Structure formats: structure tokens, C-alpha cells
Length: 160
Image (cartoon, rainbow, N blue to C red; front, side):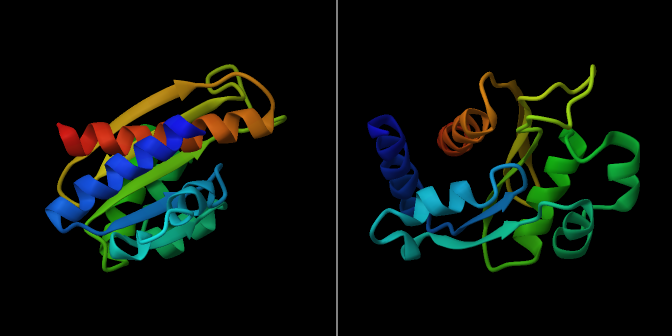
């Protein structure tokens, strides 16, 4: 957890130095990223809000993810997390966002997208960076790894 705290501290410094506000758009992590970020005192200076859009309907309604995107690519896809980032920024007062959608298990996986598959997007309305990870372990382990990767990915995206 010390590594996560260090990542959150680095993230806070990058956001503050750029005067950016962060939004989270989470599915499989169920608000875990927002909770980890807001554990830090002073996070209200750089954290705007978090969306927990667990269902496809919530992604469509609150983040403006096109139904066609979910139908064509699935909720756990690069296209969907890109749309989630854009929707999170456009439906908040935030400047940048992280989006996470995955299959934490123990069920829900397929041959193409097994349990542990998690897609991430980091970015703004104009540009996003994406990554797909295949995490191991039970539901809790997958979710914990996803939270950590979401935070570390934000640091990498802001540093690039």
C-alpha cells in the first residue's frame, strides 16, 4: 500500500501543478479508485467526482457511451473506456479522467475476455491513452490490482 500512497501523492502533485481536476469513471472497481484517491487529505483540491457506472445502462445514461459502442465492442473494451473518459469529463467539471471496465469474476468471463480482463483509459475529452491488463487472482485481487493500475496509469499519462 505504500507504493499506492506514493503514486497518489505523485498524482496529486501533477494535477495541482497543472491546475487540473480529476474524474473517475469506474465499473468493475465499484468506486475503489475514487475511495483510494479521497483517502488522501487535501484531495478536494484536485479530485472532482466519481461515476460508478456498473451497468451498461448507467454507462449510456450518465457517461454518454453510445449503445452502438457497447453492442459492437462490449462493455469491456477499448472503445467503451475511451467513451467513458470523454463522458466523465463532459458530464462534470473535471479536466481529465480515468475509466475502468473489466471482468472481476468469478463469473462473466469468456474465451475472448476471460475473468481478470480489465480495460483502462486515461485522458481528456480530446485524447486518451488505453491499456488492457489480464490480472490474476480472485475477485478482490483483480479489483485491487485494477485500482493500483488505474492510479499508476494516471501518473504515466500525465507525465507523458
